[in-house]
Structure formats: C-alpha cells, structure tokens
Image 1 (spheres, rainbow, N blue to C red):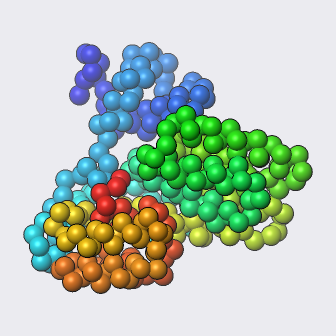
Image 2 (image 1 turned 180 degrees about the vertical axis):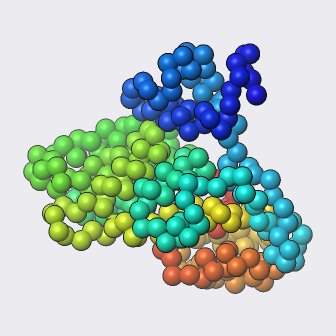
Image 3 (image 1 turned 120 degrees about the vertical axis):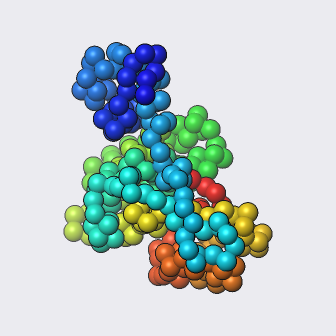
Length: 302
C-alpha cells in the first residue's frame, strides 16, 4: 500500500506510528519513535493514515454465530484470528495488571473507552477529593468521551484540576497528592496517557501502606468490563432488537443503573440471544461502569 509513491508496511509501522501521533498530540518529543528518515518521508498526516488503516474490533469482518439469536444476523461473533493481543486469552482473563492489559491491546482500544477507563478509576476515589476542581475535571473527562464538550473545555477543566493538584501537593507532598493528580490526568488530551496515568495514580494511596479503593485488581476487572474479551469479540445489529431493549440499555448508561444489568440479560434472552458471553457478563457480579462493552454494543458506541 502506498501514499504519494511511498511504500508503507502496515504491520511494521503501526505501533510506532500510533506512539508518534499520540506523543505529538500531547506536545512531547517524538524523536526516536520512528527513524528520522521514516518520519521525514511519511510526515504526521501519513502517520495518521497508517492508523486509519488499522482495523479495530468494530470494523472487523463478522460471521453469523449459529444459535446466537433467533433473529438472523442480530448477534454475531467476530473473527479476530488475525488481530490477537500481546498476551494469551488465559492471561487476559486472569491478569491483575491493568496497564499491561491496556498496552497489550492498545491497537484495538478506542480513545473513548480509554478515557472512560480513566474516569472509572477516578470515580473510585472521588469521595476522597475535597476540591471541586478535581471532581469537575473527572466529570469533564466523561463528558468529553461522549462528545458533550469541546477540546477547549476539556483543557480548561484540566488546568483547573492542575491548580487543585498544586495546592494539594503543597500540603500533602507528592504521594499525598496523587488522587488530585489522577483527576488532572483524566482530562489529558491524549486518552492513552489519561488511562495509564489515572490507573497508576489512583492505585497509589495518600499514605504508604494504606488501601486504595482503586487497586489494580479492581482496575483489571474494569478493563474487562469496558473492553470485553478481545479473543471472542461479539457484535450486534440493534435494529434487530425491539426499542424497549435498547431503551433499557440507554437508561442503564445514562442513570448508571448497573444493578439492572440482569434485567437487560433477561430482555435479550427473550429476544433470542443465546450468546453466553453476553448473558454471563450481564448477570455476573461486575463491576460495571460507563463504557461496559455489552451496553456500548447495544447503543452502537465505540
């Protein structure tokens, strides 16, 4: 595949290109991300074109899953054979290192979901944030993930949260101010950076040895709730489902009514859904957060 006469190997360049574009967006130095001669020949626009050609889970070819739904073509298993992540399925299902999971499947993760992971981490420690500027940054990050506010509004929220972090740093020191730092980074322009930083900072308690509500085990479960099992992705055509099913999914999302997930499973089952992954996820113990892969699938949110 070529662009302006330049041969581009997708498999070779993709990971480097993604890093380069992300770092450029954050204003960081991109040197050594891609060889100098390569950067000069491709340019940032061409690097983004490399990313655009990388298929994501929602764009992969789908094949019908026998017996998954009485209505033809409603639920489909996605053939992800050529798009495996950098760990085994057994490792993914048992891993308690959320940052490793994010890095392993980074090429398949949409920016919205990465942002919502950062927000979910921060929600766990939100009651421990006395400064409203920190809490407002978390809310802004969530609104930005769903397109409700602009980049400029997100930046303003981050600047305010940064001031709150500075005040907390002066009082409590570096470790003591990690929660405020997490809120600031949740509103970072680069979604991957937001996810990675918020994960680490919410895992760090204000005092060494104290427990934190957002420990890595919880965060790993959140990763699986948001991104599902990348080795067995599922897609659905919501137009094959009655409006009350998608309305229930929207209510769960808008009102954070995740205690109604078993109700959603019952509604899907009545419509002929027999997909074990979908039903077990809805009826499982959770945790569930905004970005849950089943709810997002029903609402067509990537």
